[in-house]
Image (cartoon, rainbow, N blue to C red; front, side, top):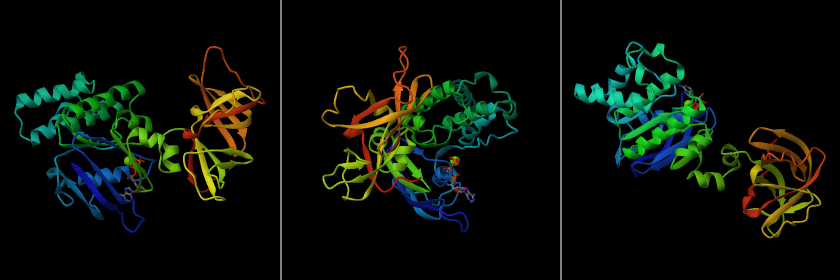
Length: 358
Ligand SMILES: Nc1ncnc2c1ncn2[C@@H]1O[C@H](COP(=O)(O)OP(=O)(O)OP(=O)(O)O)[C@@H](O)[C@H]1O
Ligand SMILES: [Mg+2]
């Protein structure tokens, strides 16, 4: 493993810890995402790895060597902050060149690398301007170029794309991915956007309230979330209240469904299924549940058209179920008041012990 953090903890003053008991490792050239809601400790984690805030306890290793107490400049890390932190008195080109000059590269080499970096973030024409003469999104791209240009062993990016429009965000995240893979830079990428994390990360750490909730590939995090929080955070999902039976099935109100795990008979379960994994049929339509499938009767209460999809709310045993269908030019099949059957696979039914929180 190239970068390892072990039992990291950060307390600011006497408050509860902002990060606690956090451990994970990255192999060389890996792109690891840190994903989680606002305030969960992402920036704090990145700052501890970079050495910008001292750790309260725990250890950080790079290539087998402990760096926990080394100053930032001795960790060979390229860092991009959430609040760009460009030097206001330097031009854009000088901002990007700064780290290269510290490394004593030749004039010609610096000129070439700065030009490449500006082209990469689609800002060729602004090299002579000052940061205040750029928009927020342009400044963000300069900060990204500044972190990448030194080709560090370890790249730490804190919400590097948060101020960009959708198209530019896509372009930039692919650029980051390409350059990171080409140069084998071990990268930690902080974001609260699950689509972004899924699209480019080799693995993802999901954090919640300062702790690691799960670490895994995007597919694992999405299909096999370890907790209801993860399931909720990485895509829309229904939460229904169930109770386990002795045979491993669950009662949802008076209906019986099966999930991906079993629990202690008689105890409460949170039953979760993603809206787009549910097929909706008219109540009198025949194809029965079929092997491996749950079937639940309900009544459509609400339909919302959102372009690509139709979003239904269906009242059924266990609660209000969201169902999502891709729209077709043929239009809407179901209307409020219609009696329907909801069908989905056992495999798509995630179950967790506990009660559905209000
Ligand atoms: N300098 C500080 N002093 C005291 N508390 C702090 C300090 N910096 C951060 N915190 C607290 O630590 C917690 C984690 O903050 P952090 O900035 O790491 O969150 P984050 O996950 O990056 O959130 P966001 O997505 O909003 O950027 C928050 O509760 C925050 O208020
Ligand atoms: Mg942050």
